[in-house]
Image (tube, rainbow, N blue to C red; front, side, top):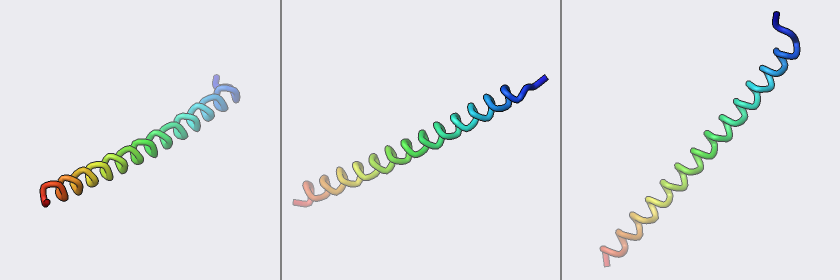
Length: 52
């Protein structure tokens, strides 16, 4: 028999898992944007360097 305590614990676990997943996705997106900006900066710098 499922008790109310088990339901509440499962709900808390699910909420915590979803919250962590959202944070992980946000951090991955930030990293991807940073890497993309870094690659663009390197490419721009190389273009200027070899263009001289």
